[in-house]
Amino acid sequence: MGLLFGTDGIRGAAGRELTAGLAMDVAAAAAGVLTGFAGATANAAVAAAGQRRHRPFAVVGRDPRASGEFLEAAVVAGLAASGVDVVRLGVMPTPGVAHLTAALGAEFGVVLSASHNPAPDNGIKIFARGGVKLPDSVEIEIEAQLADLRHAPSGHHGPAGVPADGFGRVTDAADAGDRYLDHLLSTLLDRPGSPAAPLAGMRVVVDCANGAAARFAPDLLRRAGAHVTAIGAEPDGLNINDDVGSTCIDTLSAAVVAAGADAGIAHDGDADRCLAVDAAGRVVDGDQILAVLAMALKAEQRLAADTVVATVMSNLGFRDAMRSAGIDVVETPVGDRYLIAAMLEGKYVLGGEQSGHIVMLDHATTGDGLLTGLHLLAEIARQGRPLAEVASVMTRYPQVLISVPGVDKGRVSTSEELAAAIAAAEAELGGSGRVLVRPSGTEPAVRVMVEAAEATQAERLAGDLVDTIRAVG
Image (tube, rainbow, N blue to C red; front, side):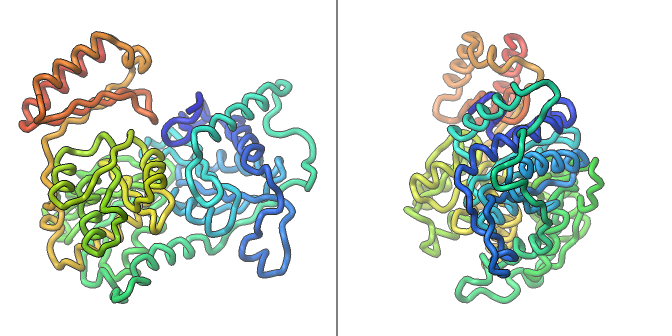
């Protein structure tokens, strides 16, 4: 990856690291790289009128954080000035933008979101034609194009001059939300023998993280037949991920118990994650959700090659459960872009991360929290058993995860002292645990993960590694 793009797009503090000027230039650079062919297929409204576009077009969506408003304006300006027509989707889950990029035939899609990060941050994520994530090589091309733009005369941002086919035009997609929800519901309702209301009678609490899910998740679950209580569903631009959502699961746990609900679903700010909570308020993480979905697909003979894709962060208990179920596990680095690459290469249909990014390639091109929650709840309803029982298909090993901020990731990565400490921890664990230390791809931090048969041992070893990281970083 280049200097700007991390494991999940470009992120930074809005107005400082991620400025309007940078957003405009990134949009213009992306237009230059991704629209090397003109004459894009028109969207539905234009095609119905018997007209054709002579310019390429892109879709742009965002989460509801306040900085998204000016960053969206900057991205739209950069695209239109480059001769790209723009369809604004407004506030839309990231996977919704991916789906609509493909459904509307756009050359590419842009999302303004920092996902699970706090409100002061924001980010730019770009999907290629078909709603797929950009490969590293294309991100490097965009950064090279961006460097050329940024060497323009002082004070100038975006492309100069008038594009050969004229400036892009900007329109709003009035029915984008309905199209996305219809698609999600169709993944259940179009299956043979599926009930008209697959979640009928189920009581669900959904935590929308005061993010993009607030306009969509409660409606989706109600349309599927559930009785829904929504929390974290009043975004004001400043409260996204603030004591709610998948990064603050205790809020959902308390709400589920208080409501006497059957289950809870938690999303993050851009709704590409899904975690769950059972009726007693216990967390069901991404590994458990992935295990449930993998076994359900295998039972229906729809799990390609009886294989699931997971990251190095997946719990040892997940691997044990898959082995017992006769399901192979392909392992990738952290990041759903790597999951998807491995899934496409092996023609697998299911992959996921412990954090709740679950990819169902039969229905989506990227991780989709709303899709995941819908299918998890439908499987609970199909089995007629509580979520706690359904999720018991795997037993989690004690696992300690610690993020160490404010250290030099490069220095930590090359430290011989840290390498020796990791080797010593691995030797102590033998075959009964794991150690993983890695720089974060989305934040200025180093992640430490230790698994062991005993929680106290995992906590002690993780604490020792954190101390070493702080000493060398």
